[in-house]
Length: 114
Image 1: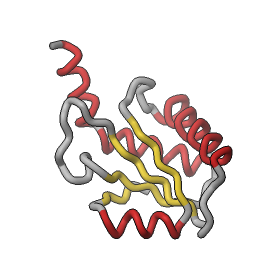
Image 2: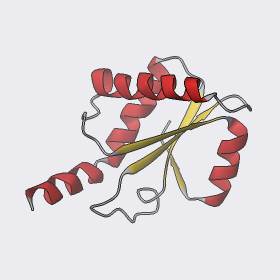
Image 3: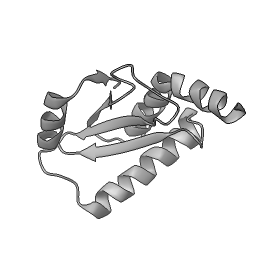
Image 4: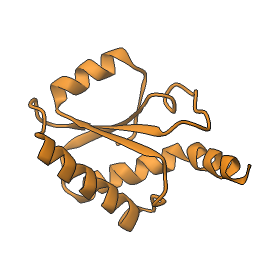
């Protein structure tokens, strides 16, 4: 039962977690907008949830799988090492170009973080 309370407390801090991601994006010098989508944005988090953070790059084309992997590592490492994201935060990071982001944002509720 302790894990459930711990996890729920973590999830309730989704704004701080997303802010750490947005700050890491800025620190890396990326031109991008950061949104929270999914359950957190729709106020329907459960104990099984993670927090979906969408990073919309300021370019039309999609990053390659290698670029996406590299960006995810750099953003998450920066958010943990420099901006206070707990290492065990249940975060799912999505990185897309502007065209794909527009498509995603048309279909879901989103909270702009940075």
